[in-house]
Amino acid sequence: MRGIGLRRRKDRGNAWYITWIDAGGRRHKRRARRQSFKGARRELERERAKAEEARETGFVPMTFKEAAKEFIDRQKSLLSPKEYARQSSILDKHLKPFFAGKLADITRRRVEEYISRRSAPHPRGRKCSPATVRKEAGVLKHLLNWALESGMIAANPAARVMMPKAPAGRLRYLEPTEMKSLLAHCPPWIRPIVLLAVSTGMRRGEILSLRWKDIDLPHSQINLPKTKNGKGRTVYLNKMATAVIRFVALGTETRSEEPLFALEATPEDVSMTFMRACRTAEIYDFCFHDLRHSFATLLRRSGVQLDEIARQLGHSDLRMTQRYAHLGADQGREAVKRLDLVLRPLEGPESSAFFEVGAKSR
Image (spheres, rainbow, N blue to C red):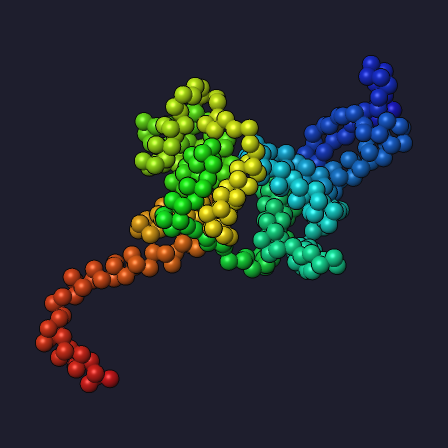
């Protein structure tokens, strides 16, 4: 059996092992997944066929399912646990069943068909939102880009596929007077969390996962090791945020690995308690995440530029921050009025003569 690439190892419980040479001339040996002679032989034939195809085409043949597993395994160290779970779910529930077969057989038309099907109304009346379809297609594009860079495919078939139009971003925020009323109706245990959210723009998960070692009060900042997009971020603290942290620290052992908020409540409990406080304060259509919008709105009204707001919020794409652009209209008017100082020599009797000359020339 040794000559044909099959070997039974008595020292490994009589298990079948297969041996083959890949397209690059490297020898591979591993335990066969099917422990029968016929099953192991078929497995060996498949591996040899892949090697032959790779030698002829220059690309490593792989099914979409195999590529997806390798892709998500590599992503695990780069993503937050929540984002990793989201991408894994998209791959397992939607992309793998639809793109069954060889990775190299995926075409642009097939990708467009997937987007069309996911965007169409469901027979039971349910329909995927454009945002959901865009997220799923984004995972597919990222996977295919990785496959292209790894030499598995010749081109990315999803590179120029049109995506569903993204819905207008939600922009709900509170005025300072409304915030004061809301805080008065919040239970004492949740007030520091709410104040920290509106004074830093941090997400709920970022606040609840904070540890004392992430906080650097001498430099007025919080160092988040990993955020929603898998990257770290520095959050700068104002007087309100600093006061909240010092209040929480009173009577507490601030051990480095201990959480800032040692709560028995779940993140969902925090959101539900906050929404009940909103209803009691007669503030409607407002959720915990909207505190982040309130933070960005107050920054924009204070004249802070969009790129700096994006940095504070941790937005990797400035387009996500564009929803706050109109809030800077007053700053734009003031900036234009500053030109009056430069154009002042044109004022007076001479300026009217200038307009008359311009009118005659027309």
